[in-house]
Structure formats: structure tokens, C-alpha cells
Length: 304
Image 1 (tube, rainbow, N blue to C red):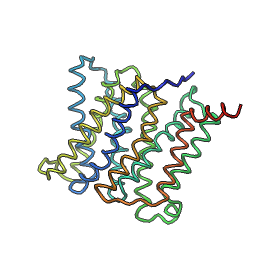
Image 2 (cartoon, rainbow, N blue to C red):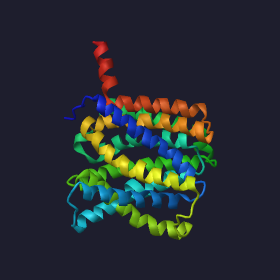
Image 3 (cartoon, one colour):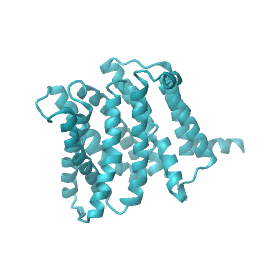
Image 4 (tube, rainbow, N blue to C red):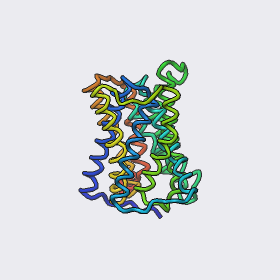
């Protein structure tokens, strides 16, 4: 039975910090994409994060795995949780606003529920989860704009690419539970971004040319932020919050990320989202809250 933990004040504060870190990552990626390509952005993100995370692993004196099976699992995890979603979302951001990318990214939890129901006997779809998932899909469709799905204009494919990234995240969560549950979280995170780096460095070099640090100061600052802050530090903070609040509560971070990304994109990049994007996010948020269960239980309590 999955028991919902109570969120302490400290957990709320750290969830807010994590949401702020991730919310700003969409802005910094948009800034970096002005000078470098999406594959190079991802290579920088996972490469520098790998260095920082292994330093943390060594400092924490955690055991480093040696079994080839574990490193193969790291490689697949890096592909599913970093290479595919980071690449698709970075490419998507070359055509759509960072705020809209963050809204679509919030659907990760919706796809995560579906993948868990497909692969794990203890994660079956209940009536509550089915309603939540349905509302979430309605929110995604509204945010994208049904008309864009019919016409496949310049904006529709990048938005679908972002959705593809969230599906990859969901598959990665299944892979992690099946293959990496015996590893310390910090080691799993370091191994994952190392696997992603082994894929991204040659891929970025082949598709976009040699990777260089001869970049504008704002681009270097953006890389430092989304690699060290929004990836390495965020993963370490993520597992702290997970231990304090539980996985169900941690899902609420996704709801906090999108408004921050929208606000920063509007203030700094001058982005303007359509009303349908906000309506879609509202539906998605309601769906995630239904999946979370507290609103559902409160409603049932009132009905008695």
C-alpha cells in the first residue's frame, strides 16, 4: 500500500527551491540556444553534471559499481532520461516558448502513471488515476491546441517533440525501478549522466561540430546554470526531497515549475503565451492533483 507522507515545512521549502531551480532551467536553455545547437546544449548539460556528481559521490564515500551489467543499465538510463528528453526538448525550444515547454513537460507525471500501470502489478490504474490521467491529456491537448494537431504547422512538431521527451522520462522511471533500485540514488544519477555523456559528446560533434568553450559570457553562464545547478545540484536535492516527502508529494514539484518558467520567460525573454496554454496547464494541474489523491479524499470526506 502506498502511504502518502505529510509534507514538512522543510520539505516544502526544498520543493520550492527545486521548482525554482528547474523553472529557471528553461530560461537558461533558451539563452544558450541562441548561440549553440540543441545537441551541444545537451552535451554540455550532461558532461559537466557528470563531473560534478562524481565529485559528490567520492566526497560522500559511496561505493562505485564495477559490474558491467550496472554500467550497461546506466547507459540505457542516460539514453532514456537524458539524451532523448533533453534533446527533444532543447530542439523543441528552438521553435516554441520556454514557458510552453515547461507546461508540456509537466505531463511527465501523467505518462509516468500510465507506464507504471503497464509494467508494475502494484501500480494499477484506479478510477481516481484514470480521471486524473484523462484530465491531464485534455490539458496537454488544450495547451498544444487541437488545431495544431490537425494542421501540423511549424509549432506542432516541436510541441509533440516535447511530449515525446516526457514519454521517455516515464519509460526511464520504469527502467530505473527495474534495473537500478539497488544503487544509491546519487550513484545512479552520476552513472546515468555519464552514460548520457558517452552518447552525446560524439553525437553533438558529428551533428553540430566541435564542442568549444569559446562562447559569449551569457552562454557560458547559462551552461553553468543548467549543467551544475539544474542537473547536478537538482538531482542531489531531488533525492533529499524524495526521502522527506515521498514520491507522491514530489510530483507536486512539477506543478510549481511551470509558473516559474512562464514568469521568467515573460519578464526576461518577452514571451507571450496564448490563453489556451494557460487553460491547458490548469487542466493538467487538476489532473495531477487528482492523481495525487488529497483533493479526491477531501471531496469524498465532504460528501459523507
